[in-house]
Length: 430
Image 1 (cartoon, rainbow, N blue to C red):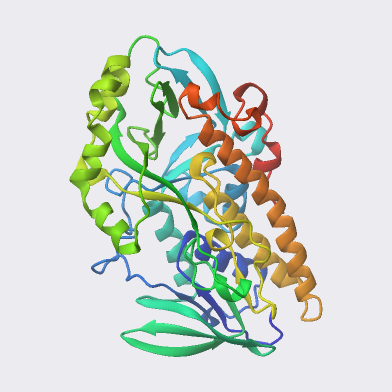
Image 2: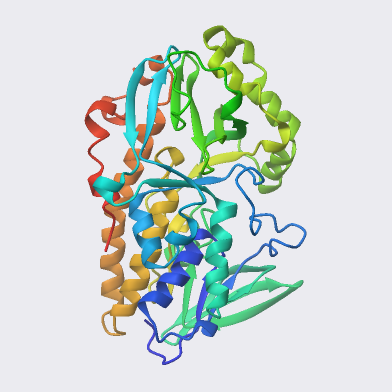
């Protein structure tokens, strides 16, 4: 922790990573003055125009299609932070996702939790439900969130702290802090200072287009169980996922993957706003699906333009450092690493980042800080690399069978041997 007695800590973003880091910092440092912690969020509050990045009190059926799957490694931390009891009844509890072919034949399953083995079932919950809980807790503790404020970059860093540039109300000003934590995602403005050079995300030429549907409107055959709500159905065109995010499991999500040229930020926003086009992309070949499975067709018949989104698939190369030379600027979460969403670990490892960094900062002295932070990053990277491999394997397991056959065996998730071999992940971190 910075050596000053009342350190000013600046956090870029009000994301899940930023909010859990803030709570973790206060948990591990009870004497820390909450009023000296400031989060800088470029978007407006939820109750103002343009602030619909979450909505206070929204339900899964009212919100955009942005569910998270929280697995035991993250839920363990959220319980220590006093959050778990506030959210556990607001999502869909599950232990595994089952995979079947279009005739209902069992292909395998992927474990994501389990009370008996890991202490928690996994919890799929909408961001709109989770984020307001976290935000309310930090605001109640006296932490300030500066909305409409974008961090443009780091100006300077020395032993006394860090100076960074913000844009607020049409004005650009410099702000000083003892510590700057970049929780600003894959397109981070802070990362280039840490690395000493720009590092742009890598676009994979793919977009995911999610949509919502109602499981009670699916035309089930006798070979499918209507109570099996977390399900992947393997077809010739790929695997169709059923992803519930409501305690009842009735509102659910699925998605399709498409090859698509990279866009500017404005281009992605324009595509996301063109809901009719997204709906057409999802449904224009519905007759091909129908020929193979009426079960699958009954899912795609429910596509509504207003329930679609675009997720461009970006990733980062492995970064050599998450901590600046001076040790005053640190990046975590998607700003430091990114995971393909197939294993649903992006949010979970970001929560781990938040918890472990806050703990390290609370335990280190000024004399040992740099070495301790380097060890922290090395340890975190080991888990991230394993989680990235798992994510790639699960994504490839959803490809058509003929596409899977073209890949090395170790790049495709093996449901028989790997599903029960995830203890290393779900037991979490201390």
